[in-house]
Length: 408
Image (cartoon, rainbow, N blue to C red; front, side, top):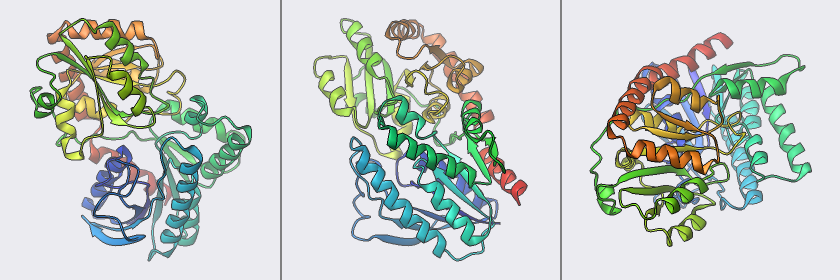
């Protein structure tokens, strides 16, 4: 089977989407399929093309067992929404041209969203190559942006909603990460003719690369964390993450010498969090670490945090949850009750779920886990076992291939 994949990121880019797609592509190739990828030059870490990749608009090559075309991402600063939207549109246009020019035939096209503009790009490519389109939705856009008020213009909201419906209706199948996201998408298709299949296929975690390691890491030493119980958030520092609860917890525990907080990542909130941390000796804010250090970063924490603003569970499932489980560490999930994250935490016995944006409940959960090393170990072991059973790369890739087989 020949498959054309259009994705905003691919390793060595450090975006979570890139990690997921890279491994799925690898599993497709390992199963004997012929894979062609259209993606961007690596840019996610600093929102500019990385050293060693600059100077050319387009690069072609073979990476692993897949042929890859990499394009200029037109990346803009994260806090400038209009600039980012224009950049995504420009990249998607270039990706559509590259996908149309790819030498067929192909049995299917898989496009990833966000950015939502890759939906039309995938549709154009699928029309050109006369094959089905599978739209893989990692976050339901523009719902997240509207919920956090990153988009407030009624005209812009109507435009994005129209683009969203166009992308879904021009797809033969839409894959999402949870039942909540499936209900969200299906609700927007209600009443339309020729509805696409909507299928839940969760993201995976590489349980071979990310595994339980000793907590006494070089990273812990670099940050001067000593033997304190480390509560860590690692990931995007954006509009969707209510990281104020971590700041409030650090303030509450500033006189305790046994608990330390670490926020590890980048995004629009990074500068403000760094400023606040200067007045809190028990809060450390650091930037993204290289991809090869991710297992070490995850092992450094005794407790991890997954946080989403209230109402976002129907639009987003943080993929970092699976990595935390694979690392054998418990987590505190500050998320909507009944959400996919809360369900997994409960089902796996891997931590504690608390209401979103509730600093008091979050602080109580920190104190509960910080004071019980045995419970943390049990939760970590249970989460690891769940990840190994339910979120393997091979099972996720096979689910995608079964779906494509149905479409054919």
